[in-house]
Image (cartoon, rainbow, N blue to C red; front, side, top):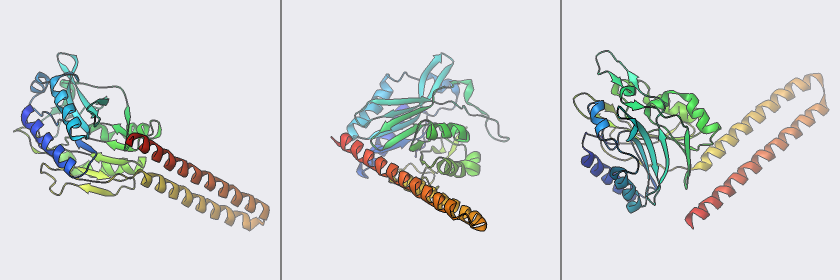
Length: 314
């Protein structure tokens, strides 16, 4: 969590300090918010500093990841766009070896006019992306999104159920009015409905005379429980949380088991009324077989994760 300004060097120094702090805490992944490298007061100002992903600014962040042996989720980088009037709002995932693993260009652009507040029209200076992006990492399959994407649940359904994401990364710079109204409730909804972890790094506080962000960086588990929060919702700081992907598997299995039991009870009640004992026994046997298959799948997933982790460690 940070309060980015229109100063590339100052923002880099802040990110460097947060990365050092995360390394000292034993973290393997640091998620930085949208506009981590620059937050200007106008579209033209942001366009003027946009760079390609092989430019000198991204190179500094890649070197930072390599130096600290830390994966970096760099949300909302001002990438040079398709024409002089537009940039991309790009979420870049950098490995601990300093390599760009994946890049997502924000699809849903934030255009809003709140009475009494500055008009924000991201589409004036930003071109939308088109690709849905996930990436495999030592700590799970992560989905890359940015800020306003949060309001489009169909994107997260695709990331989870078509792309098999385990962790949803949602770097943001939510405005104060929308943050107060919807920030945490939407994040928890995305976690629950997809059974994924959600990591939402946020911009916080007053950036300039025109712009302030809500803050409240947060980590949520697949059950919708908040497992990490910055102590001060507006301070420049990190919150630390442990990601345990076995939690996802166990809770999905428990849900399946509960549904199986409920189905069995309902069928037993119906069938017993008509006295068809053989049908009852067949239904019970069928449910036992299904449960055995589910447990074998769980065991296989755990074994695969152990093998993958061993390979990564080597």
